[in-house]
Length: 432
Image 1: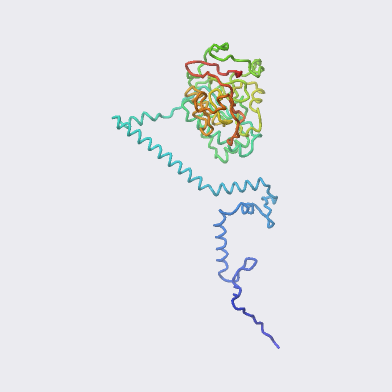
Image 2: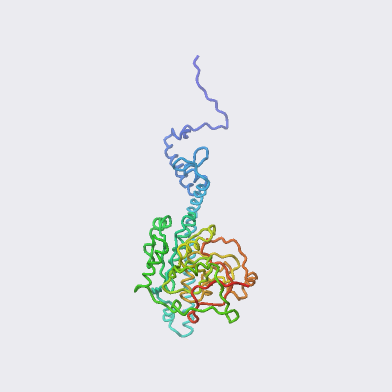
């Protein structure tokens, strides 16, 4: 007897829809293609907000959850972290753009308010507002001086990738600070090669090619100093202003005559070497000499390194190897720091250009050193108890640290100015 296939229908249970996609993703209904496209659209919309694990899967994750790269090799933890950071960077790109826009609007509003205040003051004083505003704004003018600032970029092997990115940003700021200064030093970049140069040519889209009055040298800082010397001694070398004009050599005064007696520096070999290049001064915190003033026709080398103080004394060893003068900025003679402070490359450049304008180290440090670091002038009421005792508590700094850090030294009362001439580089005094 022939039997017919029957299907029992249980109450409350829906029959499966034969038009739904199968396990392979195929559909038997005419509208299956439209449903598949809808699912793809939904996946595309969810892509920007995927989790870091999804980012790893996009990089080549296997079904067992192990992320792999294009060569089908497992990704390391550092590579996974880079993927997550890259995804987070892309996710918050619009937020950063909105913040920059808000800051720009706030800055413009502040400038408008200042301008309106000046106009109101001029109207109250019976003056022409147009004349007052014209007097306040001084047009930009290129005023070169025969002083060279060289950023030594020959420390790439000591830096990580992110530290190289930080150094490139500091170089850009160094150019901007020198460009907007009243007097313009000759800016040079030595050892211009490797990943740093590649970043400027690719990520920064060769923006440095539009920089004016900047020298790029593949050789070391000595080669850059030679070309800087030729430029400073030529017709385009600039004006020798009073602050950098050569003066008489200052003799050491005995103790108790009004000034401290200079003692023998810690490194006597620097005084004994007759073949030391006097036209180059390498700025480093390990130097036994303190920079009192800037000299005309002299190149000042700044170590371009961001290493969070992993490597000690790199710049000083390099300067001693190539037999050039060394010096450190006199931060400790003028500033009382509430924590250990490390200068970035662009801050050193800005301090040097600021001194060329005002001739006062104290003013230059106050204008450049961020207020959040708690630096105050010595002798003021704002000094902390540790600073008054001649000691400064060292704390961990979250900013980029450089090897050319000027450390806090013993105080001195001397200041370099156009009225009282002082030696350009002074030995470190001792504290009894």
